[in-house]
Length: 112
Image (cartoon, rainbow, N blue to C red; front, side, top):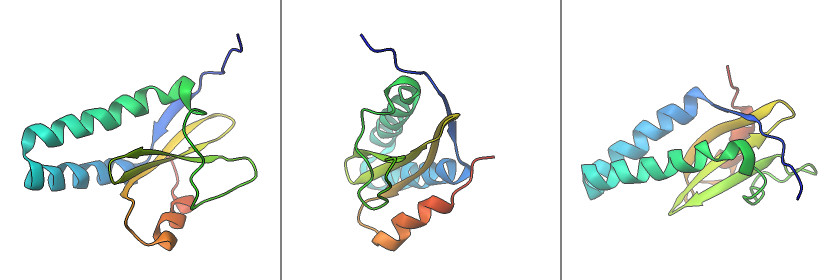
């Protein structure tokens, strides 16, 4: 069995702001309980990225040779993260229906 290196998972401030927006939209559209469950699903995937960061596909909108940009697809949302030598950086959670150039702008997101 191959040991996968565990990495620290860090989230960006933009990701946290995105989560608030996703929750507010979900609450208005589907109700408080459904929005809370959906945010819980997102966190569940994020918490498991420390060792399962290679199990999600490369983000097709941000291709690289190293396949460092990956995405988790949850309904109509993409959780985009970057694999670095030191850690996993969760960059954004965005609606997959936005323009491709806006998805590509994720490359500029920095983790503090």
